[in-house]
Each structure stands twice: as C-alpha cells, then as structure tokens.
Length: 289
Image (cartoon, rainbow, N blue to C red; front, side, top):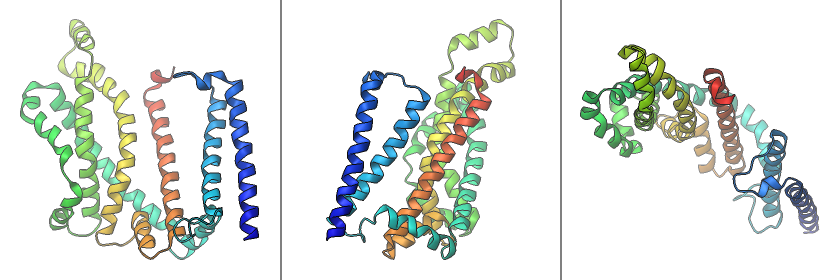
C-alpha cells in the first residue's frame, strides 16, 4: 500500500511539472492559442514529446491508483518488459516482417489496379458513365463478410491474404483516384489544349502530375485502414503475423503482451507516415517550397 502511495505521489509530481512546462510554453508562445496559429519545428517537436509523456504519465497514474487491475490495464513498465519475451518466444520480428510483406504486396497490387482504372474512368465520359456508380458503390462492400469467398477463390495461403488486402484497399483507393482526376481544374486542361497538347500530352503534363501530388497522401491515410484488414487476413489459416499475435495474446489473457504488440503497430504506422511524407517530398518538391 505504501509503495502504491509513493508511486502515485511521484507520478502526480511529474505530471504537475509537465503541465507547468506546457503552461509556460503557452504563455511564451502566444501563437499556440490562436486559431490555426503557426508554430516552429522546434516547438512542434517539444509539444509532440510532451504529449507522449503526458499520456504515459496518465497511464501510469491510473495504474498506480489500484482502481484497475494489471490484468486489465498493465502499467507501462510491465508492457516494456514484455518485449524480450515477445522477441525470443513469440518471434516478434519475424511476425512483423510477415505482416509488412502481406501489407506491401497488397498495396502494390491495389495501386497497380487503381491508378490506370481511376484515370480512365475519371478522364473519359464513356467509362465514367458506365462505371462511376459501381465505383462509388463498392465502398459499401462488407469485406470481412467476404473472407469465405476469398478462401474459395484463392485458397488459404498467402495468395488469398494478399488478394483480400488488395481488395480492401481498392474499394477505397479507386473512388479516391477517380475523385482526384475529376478535381483537375478545367483551366489547366484548356491551357494544354490551347498549346496543342494531344490526349497523351494532357495526361502526362496535366492530369498525372496533379493527381500524383494528391494521391500519395491519400494512400498514406489508407495505410492505417490496411492494418485492420491484415489482422483479419492473418486470422484465416494462422501461420503468423503481428495482427494474429495481438489477437492470440489477448485471447490468452496476456494483456501486457497485447499492449506491447499494439505499440509496435503504432510505431510502424508512424514510420510509414514519415516514409510517405518523404516520398511526397521527393516526387512533388514544389509542394514544400
């Protein structure tokens, strides 16, 4: 009991210190309280780190009160201690690599399908009239209810999982590409036509550069959705994968390990976001000038 009280007091003191530091920052940088105010990179980094510390301290404070048992909400230190067990006993790195492989292959296939189809449907009235309503409708497909069909069509191995993931991305990405093509300002098309551009010239100089500058960040957003589908895919004929690991440990009551796995997925998602932003900076440098 005394140990709990000491832990609570220490946590509250640190919490108060962080809060005071944030208030001092708010006082010094008045732009932080302005509507849509701008802040520098250094201030943004400080706020990001402060936000992470705030959540960790709040998590520890809740665990220290004893109101929630460690079985339901393990403290941060216990979650941290779960990583060696996950690595050596549950092959964390191998399962993570397997999930990234499935995700990557599904994404490559979805992009290879959606980009050409999206441009054709978005640019030409013939295909727009024939298929635009179907493209809008596929977003409502309950893919989780179709796993049985994918098993019938593609078996139970990696091929089925990759096709399922690709389908899960296509139903969102294809309407997004079509929408981006339709958003191309008419003035750009008219200017290219005035300069004598052919249909192919309009595609290469107007439509493709504009859509490319938008769709990379659209794909970045859809990466988060794909982690839900990769977990569902891995549960069909479970041969590994970090999503299947999270479900398995939760069912066995190893909540600390489940939290540790979820933290890894969050970290991977953060890294993926940065990679997509870096790719966007390389491909579309004009957006960052």
